[in-house]
Every structure is written in structure tokens, then in C-alpha cells.
Length: 496
Image 1 (tube, one colour):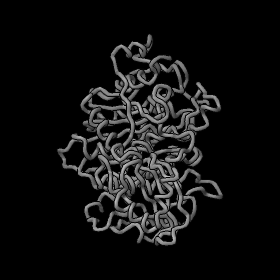
Image 2 (cartoon, helix red, strand yellow):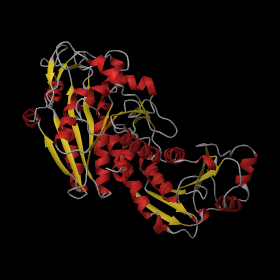
Image 3 (tube, helix red, strand yellow):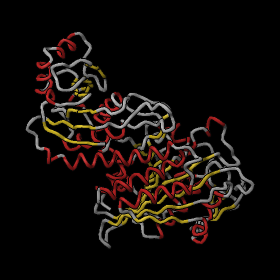
Image 4 (tube, helix red, strand yellow):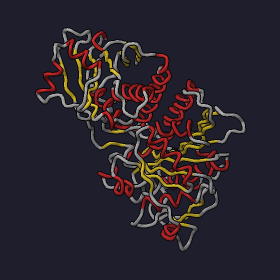
């Protein structure tokens, strides 16, 4: 996308769509007054008629604007200026971008409001740039007639006399984050006959090279030599062999601490012998969203040239029902020597990322974050829009929450009391792979805690927000790319 930032009066911007934010209540900005005058009071008449309220993300099209250079205008509500936050501004920008991206070759211009509440202009520009990239890409990868198209050109319009140089970096950062989110979305949206462990690994290598990331792919033989007994057990039922992708960004010095990002990459989850019903299996192409998020975040971290050391790990398997599939009652030996009694083959994600966590710890990770579409229990607890967070180190978790808040992404922390370990006890092994019906998201996290060797660690269960069941005004259905921005922010700002 050709994305530019300009300083100009809105009435003088040449575009197919001019997008202008309107606050709810209060006085209009100088820019809105100028537009109203240019349109001979049309905006005032719309407000007086109750058609232009300024309520958050409310849209009103003005199809005929002969006194402006833009062909037509879209007015979008900003809500109350005092309540404008990153999340609310993102909703506004995404809603507007999605509204005007239904046709090819559209040139769009979006005015940055003069009244930004608690937002800095730099953050507002960054969020807007990301929204223009993400909001114009749909999930209809295989439809003959697309419903959404990337913009031919996009302008971010600052008030006249603004210093463009102060926000140019924010524009580029927003574009990079948008590309990273779209990469994660695309991989999750593609079907499992296209995205399986080998093809995901090949795509990771393809994306890594131009970004300057070092990329290593472990095949099933290397994984066996490294002792990935738990991960390989899950992969046995499929004729698609397991892989692990390791992505290294060494932007810090040799003595700079290392952050490990670990992603669950179950490219399709049938449930194994504990087979899922049809409705539960239909969207299981999304069970590799954790790995896709890690890959997306790593490309952004590298393109931004952040002065930090971050290693991304993607554990990749299919969970299928072949003749060699692992069985209920099997005893698995994980990479760190912990033995696991299998009570449910559909609790496979934890059996994949536990070995990857152990490897990351043994290879120098100072702090860890894992992401996984791990449990339906987390969706029951928090719904489809909020990720669950679990930790063994509150200070590290607090840094992650600060990063998520600054990016407008919602997390909620759940407890990690030691009493939950009782539910994982086995009579024949060190632990079971499930803890029963109660507290399922928590017992899954307590299971993973056994493999981080006490290192500061946060587990993020993204089963709810990683894949949207339906489109909304501000959000495309399908993969969302949630938490890519948060991972980049915590890597940059977290005190590792």
C-alpha cells in the first residue's frame, strides 16, 4: 500500500474517500468548522437533524461533495473526546477502513482529529496506519469476488502547518505492525491442506530472510535427537511430520537478556482419538494461531530493528487419528524428563509447547511468553474478545499488561494457586495432561509451568480472540492477529 502522511486542509485533499472524525457533543474542531463552511452548512444541518451524533464508530456517508477535492466523504463518530483511548480510536479507524475498502483501486485520506484525548499524535498516527493496512484485507482468500481490497493509496492528513517529521516514524511503525498482523491472519485463515508443519516452516523461512531474521527448522529427526518426546507423540497420528521453527533476532548486545516467544502450532486439531464433534472441529485450522502470532511479531521486531534479543519458537504438528496415533493411557516422557499420563488426546497443545518451552529455557531464555489457542475453558470464562493470562512472576506479567494496555488489547489474569496442581496428579506418572472439568484453563497453565524451570513466564490463552466467529463493523471475521502488537511492544519496552 502506498501510505503517505500530509499536512493540509481537509477540503484540499484529493481522494476517492475523505474520512473525518466527529466528536460526540461539545464544540467542533477548526477543521470540522472549515469543512462545514466549505459544504455550505451541510454538516450543521445533519447534526441538527440528528443524523450526525458523533457516537463511537457511527458512520454517515456524504456521497456528493462538489466543493471539496475529495469525491465523497465518510463521517465517523469519535465518541466523547475525553474518553478517546487507543482501543476506541482503533475501533473508529478499523470501522472506517473496512467501510470504504469494498472496491478496487480506492484512494483514501483520513484526517487525524485535533482533539485526541489521552492519545499522543504519534500513537494516533501509528494506530491509524495499522488500521488502514489491516482493515482493507479480508478473509476471503478463495472467493472469486472479493469483498475487501487493499487501498491503491492512503493518506494520513494532519492539520495545516503540522510537522510531518515528528510522526513519520509512527507511520512506518504502524505499517509494519499492520503487515505483521495480516501475515498472522493470512496463515490462520488458510486451510489445513495448505498450512501444515512443513509448509508453515517453509513460509517462516521465506518471511525471515528479507527481514534479517535467522531461521532454523528442526525436522522430526532433529526433534527426536533433542528429546521432544511429548511433541512427537502428538504428531504420530498424522502423515505430516512435525517441525519446530526457531527465529532469532539479535538486536541487543551479547550480554543483553533474551526474551523467548513460544507459539502453539497445531496446524489442524481433530482431537485425536478423543475426537472432536464436527462443530468443534470446523475451525481447527486456527489452532496454530499462537505460532502465527509469534511469526508475525518476529517479522515486525526485525523490521523495526529493535535493540533487543528475541527468539521466536513455533512448535508445529497435526493432531490426527492415524494408526500410530498416541492413545489414552500412554505415558509420555517430555524433554525435561517429566512423565505424562495421557487422559485426553484433545489436550494436545500443552504437549507441544511444553517441550518447546523446555528447549527455550535450556538455550538461554531469560524470560518467556507463550501463546496458544489452548482451552475452551478460557473462552467460557472470558468470552471471545479477551485473552487469559497466567504467570509465575507478577512483575513480568505486569510489564506485559502495560504493553497490552498501551496497544488497546484486552487481557485478564487468572490465578495460579498451587492447589490446582492436585488436579494434575497421576498414579502412574509425574502428572496427567488434564486436570478434569474444573478450572481447565488454569490446570493447563499449571501443567506448562512445570517446563519453565522457574524462569519469569507468562502463558497467554488466546482461544477466544484469535479467531472471530463473525464479522463486526470494526473487525473482520476469521483470524484477528491479536496480540502481535502487544508482543512487539513488550519486547521493545519491557525491561528484560
